[in-house]
Picture 1: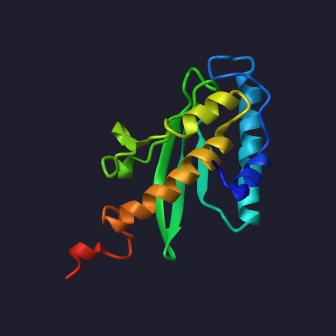
Picture 2: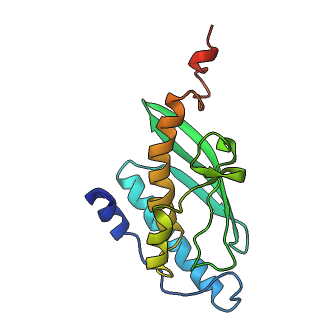
Length: 171
């Protein structure tokens, strides 16, 4: 179950109205516009709460997204490259987020650095499709995954801060 702060933050992200995926040439531009509006609202909300933690941009047709996400742990910022494609069955199917540089470092990840969201996020997306969009994916999928996995990876020495060498490699 999500905590009250998460519920409040997500309730402020606009729900999407247009039921269209990339194959729907007539309605996809309208859906994409709604996606951008929801993402902008979510980013503004995060910045107002001093909780800015990702950047995203898409290709011209809105089917390939790239960017960065970061997590602050013990006052150090750990930044990762993020990428995903919009599936042809979108919005019924959520995109598979990938953080390639973490590939193989956690069991909660698939080949290619795709993060595992099937257990907790997939049922939530299925209940709320097509109203959920990319902002919801970030807020309820990637954000919680980073909060759980990054500190664990750091404690195991699998992720090191770029300005601080791994403790087991230090001389």
